[in-house]
Amino acid sequence: MKHKRRILVAVCALALLCGCSAESTKNAKEESSQETSVKSNPSALGKGDSLPLPVFFEGQDTEGNEVTSEIFSESRLTMINVWATYCSPCLNEMPDLGELADEYAREDFQLIGVVSDVLEEDDQEKIDLVTGLIDKTGADYPHLLLNESLSNGLLEDVTAVPTTFFLNEKGTILDTVVGAMDKDSWKQTIDEFLDNME
Image 1 (spheres, rainbow, N blue to C red):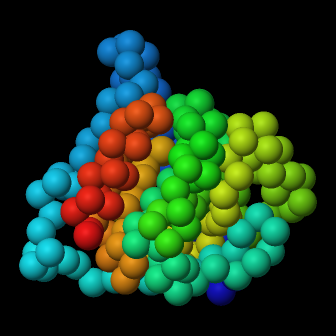
Image 2 (spheres, rainbow, N blue to C red; image 1 turned 30 degrees about the vertical axis):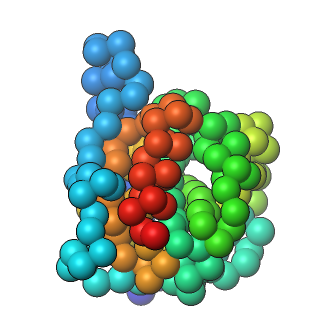
């Protein structure tokens, strides 16, 4: 069973690897690393709109702490940024994400990273690589390592990194963005969500 789980998670990580490579090539051809694909519009979200079911979320951060769906109730808006250690657009936007994580009150906004190519049970060398990249980019917010629950849940339809999800305090996905953006663009998106949640 454990062997099957490792294979499943490895296949998911490989799919993400292919996604980033394709996205990077596309961005290089178009000379832009800020191209995004947005499934919904934050300003179009009304208070009475029906939303999909909440996301089941369970994992372990780089320090070994358990994180569950309960974390969503700690902020009105949660941004989950799925990244990979090999992904240049991911790493390039992480300093901006680190700054954004510090600029909002925790009850309003929180940011969580999910490392898509390093497993919870990987050796310490791989985990040290992750923590080194986090330190280097100043992305000082919680980062979860990949596991079967995340692969089969939140990351099931993720085909490229970075992919970013916005969720409300009930853990319902409000929006998905594929691709990297600069700090001002992320801030505008966050502010629109927070304004529409009041």
